[in-house]
Image (cartoon, rainbow, N blue to C red; front, side):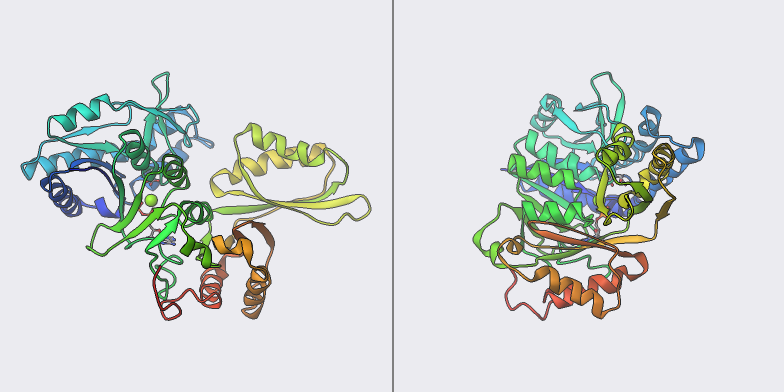
Length: 411
Ligand code: ADP
Ligand code: ASP
Ligand code: MG
């Protein structure tokens, strides 16, 4: 008998019929003799609607009340799933994040889980009940409701699995696993049998939204085996696990894209020490993460500075940067929200040269202009015009031989 944590995403609980389908799957796992804890997302589209409502009410709504609003989608689905399970004759009880409780810090809209009290869940499991937990939400030490960032139900599930020392965390979604790239934009994408925590971390943080980045951080830290599977088929999924020798052989294991960033350029910044610190300090203070940064060669004591932030932070970041640019007597502030970051990821890149030049040649052959570049040990990213995203992803996927026909044996 195992303890299994399962997570069902938005599409998987998108309507009443689908919730019934999820209940049947959960009940089957229970009937095999396992203890089951289920984390669920809001119905697909619901969280977007809630975010839009909050944005209509106030210019920068992020804060305590924002999380009160956007966390509500999950309250509906846990109740409905518990009802569906009861209708199948299973004992089931739903828990909000605050009822577990899942204790987080107070960073509204991007809170981090600090602790999960497991006593309540364990006593329900002991009674033979299935426990249904709301994904995406928690509570801080002052009793305020918090949310974990978009896609945060994945993190709820993995954190529950870690806290409960579950045997496995199964993430059920609308594709059959983790692929070499998003199967919805590249029909040739190949499903991976296994992927290392580190590669998955890079892929997730570079846009492969099949798992939220923080969920992979948790899985790595607590060594939780994560299976990504479809909630609509019985196909074998992808195991996210520790790196093994086979994985190192693969130079590039995936291509990702992220359309959720925007670019800001400050022209003619006086080129003297301390200027970057001055420009970015207000952003740090406002809790805005800066991703890529490029500084041009200096001309007549002035330079151009370009950086990217998430689209959610864009308006606020622009406002802050315009103010600082004026103070430091810089030139114009330009911005572009029609960009995409396209990346290649692979553990084998550490030991192979020439990967970057191949990537740039491939994009140039397709006439895709590269606006910014950044690299790490196991990834290379390029910012391009958003309209070329699909073209760039498919070309890179092809160039690095990631397609179904290119590999004899699936790893
Ligand atoms: P859920 O609602 O179940 O959490 P998400 O929409 O958050 O589902 O994540 C699943 C989606 O992630 C897929 O539909 C797919 O379009 C996208 N995706 C992006 N990159 C990948 C990848 N490398 N492998 C699998 N899916 C990916
Ligand atoms: N419902 C939340 C979102 O849409 C959390 C999740 O789906 O994981 O971001
Ligand atoms: Mg998701």
